[in-house]
Length: 331
Ligand code: TYM
Image 1 (cartoon, rainbow, N blue to C red):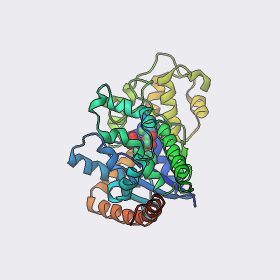
Image 2 (spheres, helix red, strand yellow):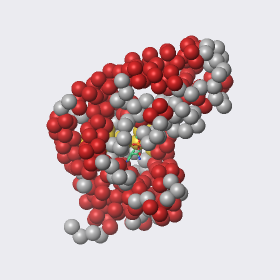
Image 3 (cartoon, helix red, strand yellow):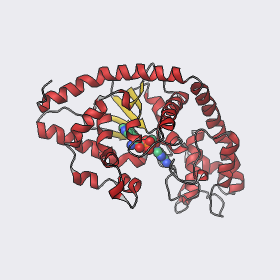
Image 4 (spheres, rainbow, N blue to C red):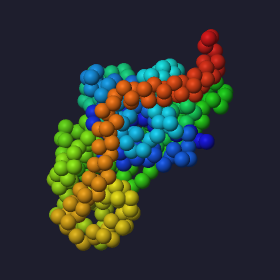
């Protein structure tokens, strides 16, 4: 079976963007692919994390995966630092990727901000570790939101350069899987900005830990233009806030955008927003309850992650051995 790998950083709160852009899509892939889902804690520490928070967030992401329907008996579920081969292959890829390639990464520029000199070396090298995550398992399909596309192109470049420089087809070429109607969920306060766990305004995002009232309140307060919803999907163009809310509705209700417009075209946001809030609460409420239930037993989560990591190492170790042999590293 073809292999899937994807990762989510345990930093801050998981958002509706993480859910619709990535986590939700992990579930059906379990029927057709060999799936590996990872809490990428070594990526999280490229920016300072409070240690207690990091440990909690790691278990919380694991709980979100399982609450969404990731089955740890079918899929491999673990945190990255439990499988040391990620960091080992990451180093090799630091020696394959070129400085010029990393200089072009837009996420580094966004995250480092104005003071690039003061960003960690890890934040700069972030994409090489991400390539290692994927290629350590020779995964060919990676379900992600749109914002990860550039990193996946770099992963292909690294695989190609490695294969070329050592004259062996060690690594496959990876394809991004960008699925569903909400591949780039936007901020609820500004339809031109991505919904992000690092946005200072909590009203800009729906967190997977938000209770039902908070979810409803945030959709009610979401920024919109004064026009009613258009009568056609094309009419959403140039109206980023309306577009975003329609995308979110379609994704959460599992219907097409056309059907959302069929139902709400010509109606005002005073009608649409409460309906959207209801759909969101109906989907996210039970998800939150299940996350809470799973998190009440952190030892059980840790044991699941340990088992997942052991199974992952059984796949990863032979690949790293192959790489070391190709390079001429004596072992
Ligand atoms: P991270 O932790 O920022 O986000 C996790 C996943 O959520 C998606 N996502 C979104 N999708 C739609 N709309 C949004 N507003 C939104 N915000 C986030 C992301 O695209 C991602 O799929 N570099 C990765 C983590 C990573 C990884 C990997 C992913 C490390 N190694 C290997 C895939 C394969 C990241 O920072 O995701």
